[in-house]
Image 1: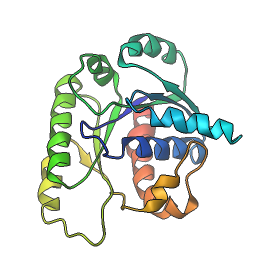
Image 2: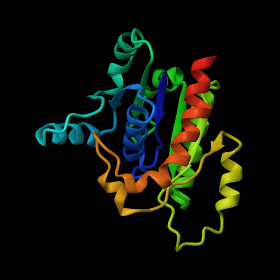
Image 3: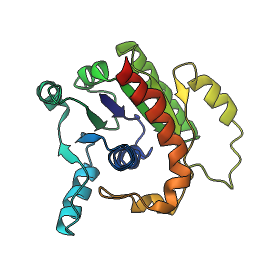
Image 4: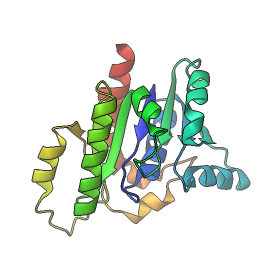
Length: 211
């Protein structure tokens, strides 16, 4: 199964959400996971190398890759049964190399924030995905929600996004998310991440694999 984590807007929390999902799938669901790090910053690959230096073996393989590498890698990964491949996408939409990746996706997860620029980028991302791949469910994840901020347009934004996919439970803005790495998720985050990750797994991953 191929799952994309992306948004055109940089800083939406793609890489952190990729780690959260990968840690959850390997530790809670005992699934085999490979991450393709296609983000330009390749922060996930850097975290994996840091973990090895600290003698903490990552729970899964993280492969730094360029968009142009995907067709060849897809043929290789397609031979691995029962493997879940997560792709941390680059924060852009103007590369034709994204087209085969979008077309191959079994599900797309899109973190976003309730600010004007993030919402506009999220809508553009959703429209492009919808044109290229009509079968993959699109899951929007409200991210970095501040409890002290009143989001006056939140209901309106969520209603618009539901025209493209599902709006999942959101994640709060907490400093603990900076401690997520390739070998563990801080247990203090479990109460806030499990409602989201359980829903993604049960409604999209487990269900897709039964089809």
